[in-house]
Length: 335
Image 1 (cartoon, rainbow, N blue to C red):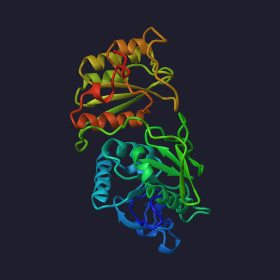
Image 2: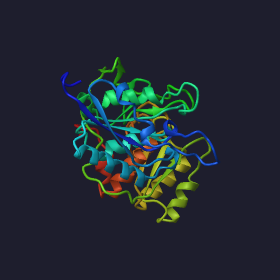
Image 3: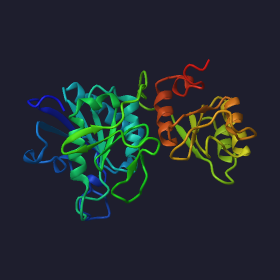
Image 4: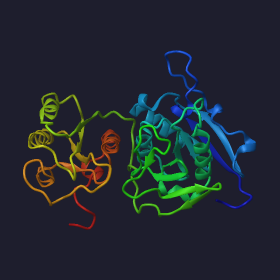
């Protein structure tokens, strides 16, 4: 973690969430500011100084795409100001989506770390202070920069593309089902287990979000009525992401409606509602299968979850990036 004499300047950006929830006094949910989340200097890990800043200050369920743009701008400002790393405190409900949005929008020149808490500061055994400390340690380690934004929770380090909230109430809420954590924090040091991915999710350019993206979930008996409603009103959505069954399947009725939607000019992207697993290409055929949907011109989102694919489509279309560039239809090197 740098030379023994080097002091690392870490920006600490607060956005609200459970980690910052104030004791209840009214029907409203109030949040404390970043000052209450900043560890006192005597308790900081060695050679780390913290520069705190309030950015948003509300529950993650209330955040919008515009808020994600605001946060990405704030991270860029911290990096431009010379910070050696950035830590963001955040609510856990949409933490994985914010991490991925930052992976799309922020160039990983320094470590960017997102963390939060499952227990409020006024509840027994709050986990926020330990998570903030581990996040500060991670943000001070320059070897994490090539990984892009990461989530540090319960001393584990997870990459933005793969991390997901697996438990609604347990303290150990986050996991990366496809590969596990890429590292962990112990004794104020980062231990890396896996190298960074060879590519990046960062978009080649970005603009403030203007696109409207609908999200459709496949399930038993879900037909094409919702997709047909989007077709009949072209102004409803600029794109659609589908959380499909299994390896990229939907009911025949929904599949036919999605094809009609795509042929009418609305981008349609297929993901899986499974938390882990591949989207297939040529295993199953018939109406609503992956072969049928791919042959009909729909795009597939590889390992991205539906919420993350939605963000990629949202920010990509807002920046005028072509669908084939956002979600390539062919594997690299496969003609």
